[in-house]
Length: 276
Image 1 (cartoon, rainbow, N blue to C red):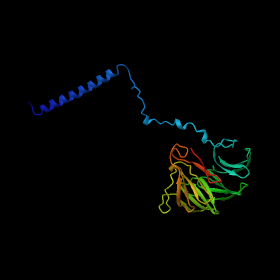
Image 2 (image 1 turned 180 degrees about the horizontal axis):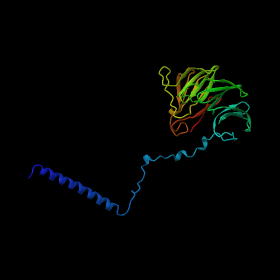
Image 3 (image 1 turned 60 degrees about the vertical axis):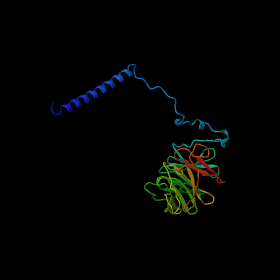
Image 4 (image 1 turned 120 degrees about the vertical axis):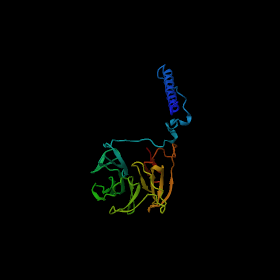
C-alpha cells in the first residue's frame, strides 16, 4: 500500500458518509412535503403570555365625577394649551396665536405670534407669559408685548411655566430641568432637576415633550416627572421634598411610559391630571 493511501481511503469514506447524510435529509423533506406545505397545528396560548386589557375597557360608573357641559370650535388646526381667565373666559393657545374665548365660545381677543406657542401662564390681571420654544414673551391684557427673553439654550423646549413672587419657573423638556428666571428681565438665575445629591434631586425623566409644573398656595413647586410616572414636590430653591404616584393600570396610578402629561391644582389643592 502506498504511503498516504490509508488517509485517502478514510477521506473517501468520510465524503461518502456526508453525501449519504445529505441524501437522507433530502428524502425526509421530500416525504414530509409530499402532501404540500403544511402549517404547524395551532396550540393553546399560555395564559402567562396573553396581554389582556379587557378589564380596563370599561370604566366603573361610580368613578365618573364630571360630564361635558359645553363645547365650541377654536378655529385652530392644532391646540396646544389653555388657561382659565376671569369672567368665565379661557385663553387658548394654538397654531401661531393665542385667543381669548368667552363662555359662549366667541373670540374676545387674539394675540398673533411669529411662532407656535407651546405653553401659557396668566401671571396677573395684566400679564400673560407665552412659551415659544426656547424663549418666552410677556404680554399685557391688550396683547402688547412687554418683554421678550433671549434664547434660553440650544436644546431648550419650554412646555410649562409659573410665577412665584419675582421669579419665573420654566419646565424645559429639552434640557430635562427647571429654569429659574428673573421676572423683570427674563434672565436665568438658577436651574435644577439634574441628579444632584446636594439638593436631593433624583433627576427628571422626560421621554417626550410633556413636562408640567405648578406652584401651590404654600409656595412649593409641584412638578410632573413623567418618565418616573409620578408628581414631585420641590422647594422654590430646587430641593426635592417628596413625591406621589406609581406605575399601574388602576385608577390611582399612572400607566404607559410617561404620565401625567399635564396637571392643574384646584383651589383646595387637589390635583387634576391629564394622561395620554
